Length: 458
Image 1: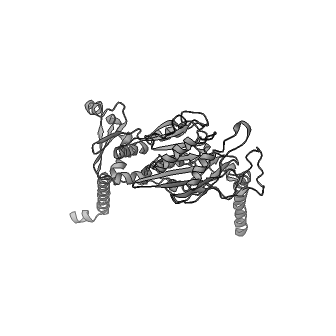
Image 2 (image 1 turned 180 degrees about the vertical axis):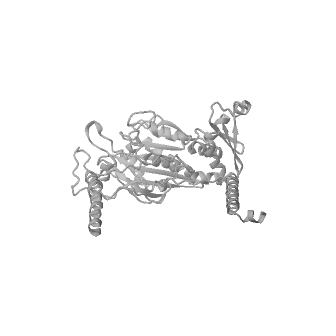
Image 3 (image 1 turned 90 degrees about the horizontal axis):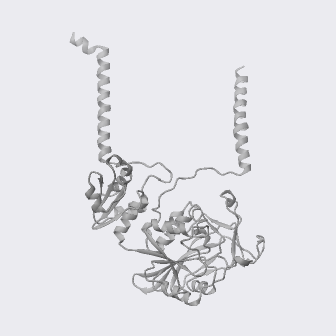
């Protein structure tokens, strides 16, 4: 009787089902154990929007001492920061993450100086820094401040009609200033006319589109600063001669740059590339999509940048400097020397045809150990103003330039990844072709195929 029961079909099916259930349960249990022990994930987005950048990974993996990230929030909201913080912990065994509820442990929050919920405190060794935001930018910035333990100040030269960091209008640099603040740079304005000396607290100086000539003492102060190991960004507009919009040629300053190997040409670049119309800019904006190999632009591959009202450069090395171009315009550009006319003849045989160098980076050999001057020259300044700095990769270029000048290459491109705009921009003829294909051609092929099959079967 028992033998017949064991041989019964229902018994076999029950045994099979039980075995399968046990196997599935075992797999689920093992998978959960492995998932708890090895907290790995896969980011399938094209720009790795939900992964930490390579620069962050390098900083964390190179830690020489233990680090702790303490997240202060209500217990029910620990998950708000857990995904991001666990990514840091997964990068290195030296990183440990703690979660503290200020309501349950107010003393810990008080000792850490935490006032707001949702705040992270990063400690590396004995150094502690509060993250400015619960983003990769904020957390990694706190790591860098712990490791560097220095104050970095970017000084903007004023007094000759330059763009102002405290101006929020289209011509101002307030957005640039905000971006610098997010990377923990301090900013200040300096006037070399009042005192022809760059303050020793300046990590780098910025000359942004002066409309008036620099006096020789100002130029001498900049020369001494860079040749003693200082860092400088020069953004010089074309010397246009259009009434009240006239821009001085600044011969003394451009002569200094020429002595360093960068000749700033007196011309205006016109870009006839039809791509400009597709992205909504005019012919006065030089578009750049290809870059040379240099830390400032290495991460900009595949990204467009735009430069309104720009001029070209010629670069060469000198006995004291090593100069490298950063990028050129496209072959669809021309440079005109006629700077006094509001109408440009793009077919003028006197025009210089592209590609044209738009920016260059150089180093100055001071002769002193661990003391190298650095400078970057860009043939235009409007690209970094409030009106244009948010155009595609312009903000990254601005920040990468400051990072390189201040020897903060590890900060380059750890800024948060933006959502990709995957909209397709087409011309009117392309839209007509898509409409004809989708409404008439493809349906027509289906109808013809159907009629052919029907006739064949008859």
